[in-house]
Image (cartoon, rainbow, N blue to C red):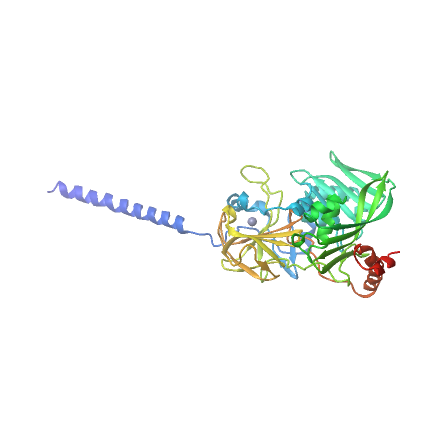
Length: 467
Ligand SMILES: [Zn+2]
């Protein structure tokens, strides 16, 4: 007994710490299983001050202004943990938006962007929204100060490589003065093309037989011309609605070189769908308007939320994956919003996808006209169905934490012509119509153009005004 007693004591002494350690281990395991970070975006907040603007180039930090509200922006590289866990917000490949012929025509080559300069544009701003490597933009604009003189309505285009480095940049100053900038080592070179073609008006009348792209091509319209037409009319008219026997009339100015044309400008287009007429006419400001000088655009919300939210991860097409060191683009903006926050459609459009899809979680894609698509990911709830029409500001879902996501947030993407752009800086369409003197000028101009868009079957009186 005396011998067993101490051994019992020893046994108890051993059992108690053993149980305690086991208990602690269970608590640790349970805690690590149940624990959710309260603030998944371990980020550095940059106060939005004018000084931040000047540090953009060195620090790769972009201050964003949404409406009148300011957003705090974080440096993506400081939130490595988030990068690993949310490397790509990708729906499953089969849930990509199905492209039709018009989409193919509009999106064109992968790495080429064509852009018409609008009011308030700067070259830096334009290229930043498309995610061009900012040190390249800086180099180009520093070397060629004249690039600060872009004019409204001028056409620019550029080519980037797979890593968003700028290879060439074209600036159409006038019809016969095109400046071409090419990357050569650590600088850009400039040359000017000054071929003189002859600009000639062309009018083309067609009847829909199969579909617009095929019928327009058969009449000699180029892909660029077809893309311009479908973009000009995108908010008024869905080209898929065209029926056999519907008519179209196109007025172009083409620059001819030895009987071949390379450049062209769409002056006016008219589509007759059943008994309804749709017009788009080029005004002096480089934009297209309807026959009354009204806008052909729909305006957009800058962000898909009722009130401002912090950006926890900015748009960054050159984001490097911290582990693989490969480019793992962040094609959208992450807004730090709690679960259940209403998500709004930023514009009028058609829901094309509304389903759970891989690492995107609950995912909605909306088409707005022909050029614009928006995507909303990691939603808690989807409140719309594919095929549904939505208006600007409609509640389409509730934000959440589904798919590959470390904490509640909304991942939002905006694509223009099939390419992801920065939704916070992108040039969104405006819905202002013409007013005052520019409207009077426009209406005068339309009087002379209208007869030129008449169909052969229409009254002889329009045919006479034609001459
Ligand atoms: Zn994201």
